[in-house]
Length: 257
Image 1 (tube, rainbow, N blue to C red):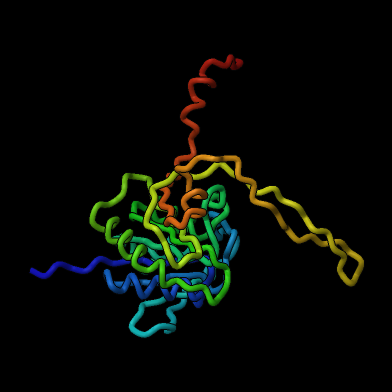
Image 2: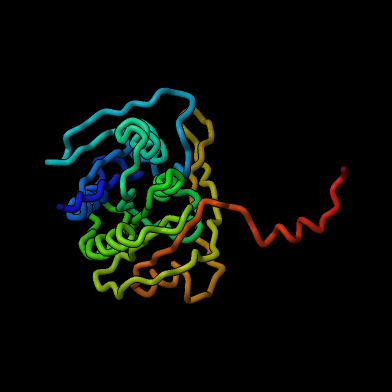
């Protein structure tokens, strides 16, 4: 009996026509049946936002040959929710992959990333999920060095599964001579934000968010170190944000009855 090919949901946050999602679609087609549900416009930095105050649109489109594709008016997390409820009608695909994002989503960026949030939403729904990102924001980004790693990592997840409530955050340096894969932890870092104040033609102030990435971690087991040393970083991520190490401390506090 011929083994049925896995069904793979492809999502992103850069929008359905971004070059990164096209590259990801082509790789996933080598592994199984692909269904694409992606935002109709860029949604970078949306984090895990969902749409609750207005209706959502979901339209089937023909962009790439022989590919089942749907354009969603919502956020990346909306795309996964609608895929499960509307397209898969409550059943689950075998894998959810998000990306390939134009720009890194390492370290603290996981909290802001629409790419990772789509994968998180997949994991919440019990779907093995992976987010892929490349350190190149341009439309001319070269995804070719990433493709064999993307295929291999996806194959590993399809074969071995992932622990419950866990997904993978995979980042690629913008290098042709990648050294291989490093399993890492998330580096301790933050963005030191600044707001560049300007004045519009009506004399009213407006602001551009800028910032500097501040790394406070010298470990050689982090995603930042791996990327700086030409490795593909793979970080297992969980969406249980409980600070378990703080529970014993708080249990020693005295609360008013």
